[in-house]
Amino acid sequence: MRSSVRGPVVNDGEDSTDSTPLLQGARQAEAAPACCSARYNLAMLAFFGFFVLYALRVNLSVALVDMVDSNTTLAENRTSKECADHSAPIKVLRNQTGKRYQWDAETQGWILGSFFYGYIITQIPGGYVASKIGGKLLLGFGILGTSVFTLFTPIAADLGVAALIVLRALEGLGEGVTFPAMHAMWSSWAPPLERSKLLSISYAGAQLGTVISLPLCGIICYYMNWTYVFYLFGIVGIFWFVLWMWLVSDTPETHKTISNNEKEYILSSLKNQLSSQKSVPWIPILKSLPLWAIVVAHFSYNWTFYTLLTLLPTYMKEILRFNVQENGFLSALPYFGCWLCMILSGQAADNLRAKWNVSTICVRRIFTLIGMIGPAVFLVAAGFIGCDYSLAVAFLTISTTLGGFCSSGFSINHLDIAPSYAGILLGITNTFATIPGMVGPVIAKSLTPDNTVREWQIVFCIAAAINVFGAIFFVLLAKGEVQKWAVSDYHGHKN
Image 1: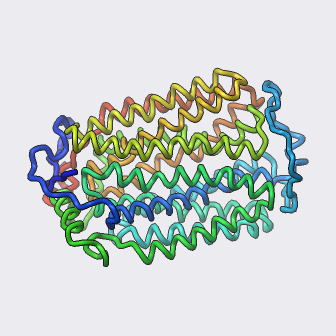
Image 2 (image 1 turned 90 degrees about the horizontal axis):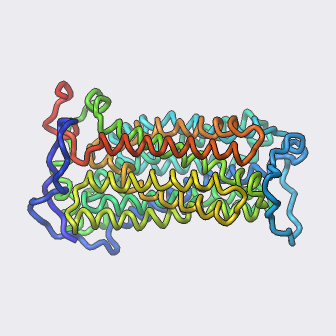
Image 3 (image 1 turned 180 degrees about the vertical axis):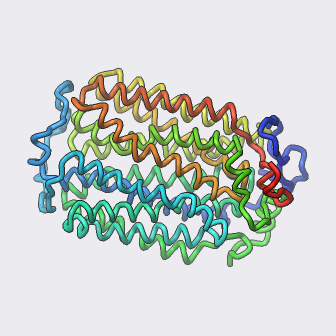
């Protein structure tokens, strides 16, 4: 692959057209090899970091099933009788030594949702701090803090619901800085023509973390007890932190083992894209329509993502009626597809830009459309096939898999329009995109009081409609060029 050393055309007008391929006609410089490079080592360490991050996030969703006394939920048993019991016969005696708690459905909802109340607070501050001090420490200590708090989950549960809710909110505070911090790091590390690949690799860890942790948590709960779920992933997170602090640097200039060839390649490819001004142009940022295009797309995508992430195990158990072991594996299957799609779509997106000379905005629009319209179609289809277990799992898997295309669509568009402020921009968009995690599952629960297939059809249709709206909004207003307010020679009073 060959890469340019001159930055893209800077775009100030929100009404201008992004019709030229990225860096077209610019002077070319030889790309540094990817194998064993510092930038791909960073991508892999970030991959494992986000693997741990999402394992820490979703473990409670599975463990909570075993933490609650079955007698508490017996009186309000929500398992639908529309579909036949599809559970496999249980052949091994289940371990039931873990302590049980008298938590009703509403209390469980507060416990699961409390994470997002902390998570939403640190998004924008995380992006701002990362732009000032770098993302290494912020990301590292964010995951370390979440890991340590996770180790105390069994103690907090013993102390009571309030303690557990506070602990989960604190975990959310720690995780809230991670994505903005990572975006801030990539603004210094990712050559423009490798952004899709590098970012899709690093963020794909979140999907694989979901894939592995959902069934693994089910197995641990089944054969051991739920407390070990939190001990295992907490210790893994601390181990990752040690590796991260030892091997990673904030910028290529401060990396101890990077080759001169790779350092020059990265720095030259980002020339004229980064701003040296110390103040953040908050007013132009907030007035930028391309940013709001990302906000709407991110919000819309996360509505579906968080609804399924939180409630898919419930849907599998109460509607399709799979037992806890099958539930873990089948709930994880869609995220395996999404993980695979993220990796492949990142390769495809950069190939389209580098080899086929397709414009940045065209790639971002195409991948966002596929990653949002496709899931909407199959999500609706999953709701209307009734109790056909195979088709339900297949459609939900395809829906979530296609969502992986968004990792090379709107998800990294922050770096296209403002590399210097990518962490702050992601903090802004992720603040809005966290709201679905807080209200989406609550609304879904309120729409399914009788837990019927018909009620779940409404939940899926609402999510699909929001997805379609977000995709259209992004396509109409998104840009693929660095905005004028994001470079050094632009001052905050101009917009």
